Amino acid sequence: MSLLPCMTQKEKVIPMPMTSNCPITDLQWLTSDVVSITMEAGELAETAKAGQFVNIKCGEGLLLRRPISICDVNGSLLTVVFQVKGEGTTWLSQCQVGEELDVLGPLGHGYDIPEGKVLVVGGGIGVPPMLYAAKCCHEADACVGFRSQANAILLDELNAVCGKVLVTSDDGSIGEHGFVNALVKKALAEERYTAVFACGPKVMLKTVYDVAKEADVPCFVSMEERMGCGIGACLVCACSVGGHHKHVCKDGPVFNAQEVDW
Image (tube, rainbow, N blue to C red; front, side, top):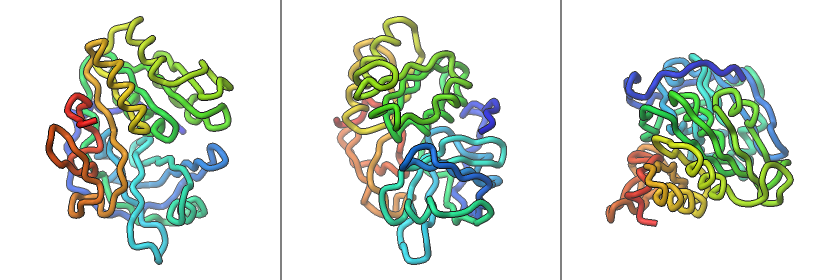
């Protein structure tokens, strides 16, 4: 996967979501249950922001599209990385190069890129969107956590765009033994960052926010919720932010961690 410089968020015009038929140009299995698909997405790719996602139609018999975070963008090429978990993602994983996907996007509110160096943090399948986030930053380091070495993904790609990449695993088979929040605490103690960007399980996001708050560094998190429409028309992905109900698909998925009602 080629990695090229990215515009900052402020240089991009945020468009209305569009539906595109996107031919698959590459499909790879990264692990036994994680797949990377790159597609020719035209304007949809060229206007996407780090932290946004796309909604992909997965088969004729499935009513709801599947929301998948944007992992990378190279010109008009857009890459998504997803875990095969159910009927929809199983169908998607069985597609072939040359087939077209019905894609709605870009969707949601992504990361606003600040000046200075950013620490991007990903856990498990929350790692893929951190690649494009790091790529869009002026400077970035990364802290990523996996269950084991067998589940590790995108390390070469992250090393290509980050100053340093710290790795941890639940079983100690790769990187340090433990959880990613310990790496974040270590990184924040050793260097000054403008912000922390994080994506992963909610319990991980809370611990990362706690560490960032202690270090007095702003933290922005990508929340994961089940989605129906992806455009804010239904109430499936509601979450509580600042005492108010917000839609992860429209108001997020990226929120200021300080405002999330944990």
